[in-house]
Image (cartoon, rainbow, N blue to C red; front, side):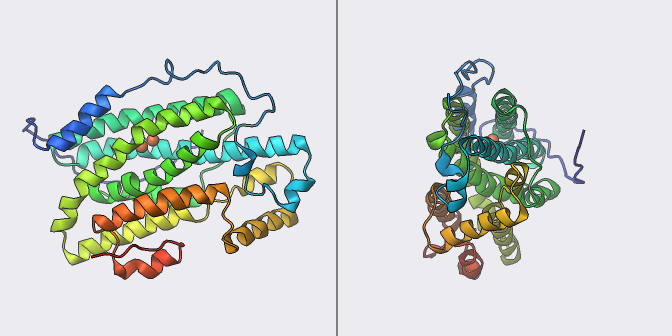
Length: 324
Ligand SMILES: [Fe+2]
Ligand SMILES: [Fe+2]
């Protein structure tokens, strides 16, 4: 069984004052306790499978509408649809494992009882997401997993290897989780299988709390940071954005379906062409809406993105809003 070991060194902060000190953080903890759900009990696992065998809407397959797609048989389209789902869910299930580990570290390294209490609930949330996605993969996709993409590995190396809580929180709760939310929203609205829609809907219920932790805890750190520390936080934000917004191409799914190197090159060229024409496929539309509008605005508002990184963001197709 493959495992990945990430060296890390942290200092555990033991608190002695358990009174409420951060009312809003305690409120988030209360919400987390109130809104727990159970993947065994609350997901309708007996939902019948769609009769055409598809899990996602075909519009979410990158080459939908292309000349290559037009030449494919119905059986191959269904198979590609399922493999693309398995590829996306593999990326997400590794992300949930990474989030579980990062939040268990955060319980240790974060200061403040209210913050530790909240992080303890996020540990349970991420374990449940890891569990429910794996159960879906087993239940509907015959346990098919694809390897962890290199960009995801690099990102979790940073999140899990850095000892500072705010670096973990910026990269995990603010960037990686917002990316995951965009994917879950897209699948919640466009999945063909009602069971997958329900799994995504349930996961999304937990995610706004996780983003909330970052938005509540980071402003004070950013305010008191030195210029050098602030630049470092900004660079980590950009690095995380670069890792989540590039390099995610399900090449293995096409290869496994028997696409030749020439055909894969044709798929890549088609994707590049669609992007260049600004003729955004459904996938990109969701990302533009969720990543660009909500996340980038939030990051800029709390001072994590400044004029200094405007060119770096522009290379990702992100326009930085005017910052004060
Ligand atoms: Fe999660
Ligand atoms: Fe999360």
